[in-house]
Image (cartoon, rainbow, N blue to C red; front, top):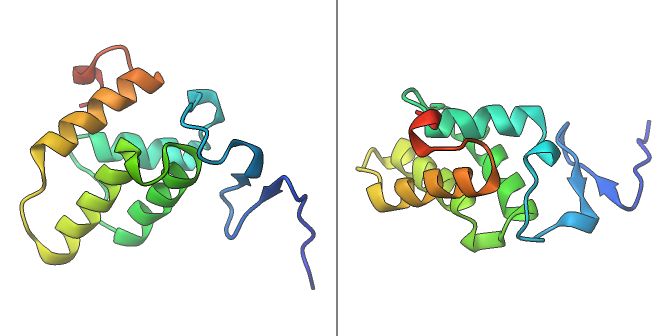
Length: 115
């Protein structure tokens, strides 16, 4: 059985990829799928996800819909996966940039609200 997809909206799992908004560098919080928002908020919280597969799902979304490889949410997700995979300390400056970015995007008014 084949699944037909609109050429403007494709997916390789249940998270849609909006082709028109890829790497637009301007993310509207209302456009972030619930699952990606939940994972992203988890990455900012006190008990971040411990499954690299789950974190990479969010990284992929931020890479496609954010600023590509320079997107702070993408970079922090990759940094967290690296931490999980090889158990090395994570980059505090990258985490701070991630929290600041989430405030800029509109996930919270203040960084402390994300923790």
